Image 1 (cartoon, one colour):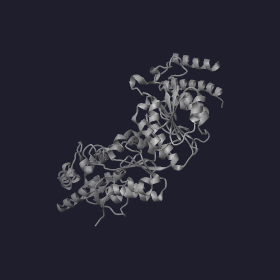
Image 2: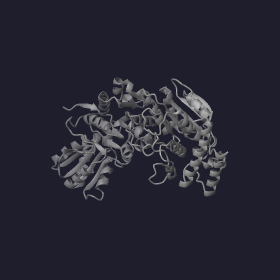
Image 3: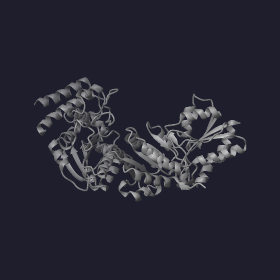
Image 4: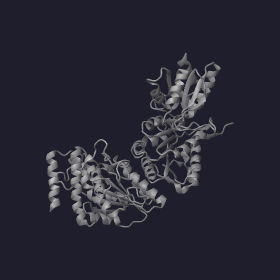
Amino acid sequence: MNNEILNEKAKQIRADIIKMLYLCQSGHPGGSLSCVEILMSLYYKAANVDATDPGMENRDRIVLSKGHACPALYAILADKGYFPREDLWSLRQIDSHLQGHPDMKKTPGVDVSTGSLGQGASIAVGLALAAKHKKAVYKVYVVIGDGEVQEGLIWEAAMAAAHYKLDNLTVLLDHNGLQIDGSNDQVMSIGDIMAKYRAFGFECIKVDGHDIEDITEAINVPITDKPKFICCETVKGKGVSFMENKFEWHGKVLNNNEYNIALKELEVTANV
Amino acid sequence: MSESKSLRVAYGEALAELGAKNDKIIVMDADLSHATMTSIFAAKYPDRFYNFGLAEANLMCAAAGFAHSGLVPFASTFALFGTGRAYEQIRNSISYVNANVKFGLSHSGLSVGEDGGSHQSIEDIALMRVLPGMTIFVPCDPIETKKAVFAAAEINGPVYIRVARPIVETITTDETPFIPGKANMMKDGSDICIMATGLILREVLKAADRLATEGINASVVNFHTIKPFDNECVLKMAEQCGAVITAEEHSIIGGLGSAVAEVLAGNSCAKFVRVGIQDKFGKSGKPGDLFAAYGLTAENIAAQCKSLIK
């Protein structure tokens, strides 16, 4: 699928995210909108996955460690055909297979249950080490948030990834600079995150986190004997003007007026 | 004479034996392999042993990653750091998704001894017992430890094996049944039933002998499995004896005593008392001295029995 088509698709994915969150009147718009292109680069370009065979043994594993951004993941999985698109409108409702945070036991295509921050990154290390152990060739991708890197477990996982030379593991950071209580720098500065991961022994690449071509290129850079870290520079709330770069939209509910404006914005741009 | 061995050595040996039969068995540790005795497995199967350093949270989540990959990880560290520090990792990454992870955690209870209260886990059973789908084994001797390891490998889902440090004599035999969720009657009597789990069973058996000399016939039941719990056995023995005492090397809150109380409440009029650690922390000392200081002795158990049925 070429990048022009994917960029158009990204708008549809964002519109789906907005609709899902509006319908259930809960959830996390800001961080869902910021990681759309990161997840699309994996699911449409770089990763070896098959919607008709979600449990395929040699599939690449994709872990959304910042699990609260699952509306983005669900919209993409539905678009890929893992389950019907109509299911999206049941997000967070009783008996829906689309839980408030990703659930591997309920949703086809979800490789790992996540949401408790830090744990997805650590499980991904286990998956990657287990793949090495089995001499399997599949790769493991994990998407983390920049508030999430304040969790100590992120660094326990990073240390182990380098120690075991997990060159089948790629950590993608959705670096939008904001978290629930404010900016990273206001809440707890994460400092020079590239330097930190480099010091932990990762190959580090910085990309425009809304440029699918840029992200995909970084994912495909070959590495040996060390894990990879891709710092994806993103905009929280990307695509909806009144949400962009506003930490207040981390977990805010859309009212009817905001919903209509957001959809209109996305449709307008979609029709350009 | 029965063989003496530490439960942790039995644990390490059982892992090595299990590893010979099943190449999916992976053993992981957090820089305590020479204390948890997973070093025995590591020496035999270095390619199936992974050290995660002093990072218990990462140990547990990484184990989940191995389980999701079709392998059968046994993750080990001390009981306090496994069930305590990594509690939420066990809760969300293992228990919540029924990941096929086993954790044999050693140095449980007061019997750690000299290391003191900061290292004595007296709440681990309580922490694990509230997790849906968790299986909890508390072996009382080396033979039961081995059986618990082999039984854990047969269960599809998380299993906690509570392993203790001291060298102890075996009190069960190879032939003693070990059916998960099914308590074992060790002595049958009709005056009072002493329900126990783990190392304290030795004191309980001595207490029962002591009571017998005074004409009191006590039953002794070994609850090697705390979850799933043998409710049926509790009710049957309460009916048979009319008085029940629990004994454990754990807080009286949340462990065996609580499990029995939950079954008895509303279902039985049997008299009931809990022997265990009375809602306080441990401290340094020799294991025997600590057992005495906290009332985990044959003398105290016998005295409690007499007081309950007088």
